[in-house]
Image 1 (cartoon, rainbow, N blue to C red):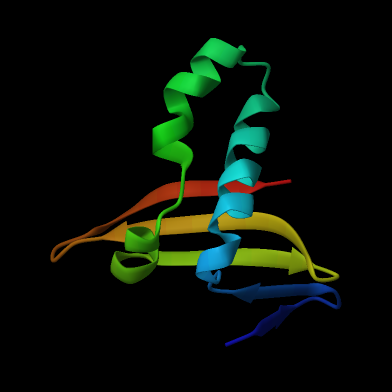
Image 2 (image 1 turned 90 degrees about the vertical axis):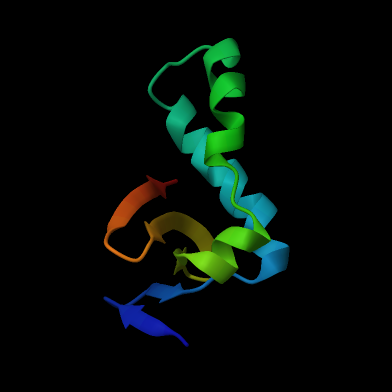
Length: 89
């Protein structure tokens, strides 16, 4: 399902084949803040999106003119939810 935001953004769940690009966006966005490669490598596992994330949680991507521009990930359990990732390119 697509949702238009403004005139050129679309929000939707990612397809499994888009998880690698979405994960790379998360890493690139985290790196914007000047963290060194060692720190980013330590964060890698936490920032990677998996097929399990798609099945178990709410994951959404933002597309601007059909180009990946952002990622959001909310993990849910029986009692609460947690913002796991929110990154933009």
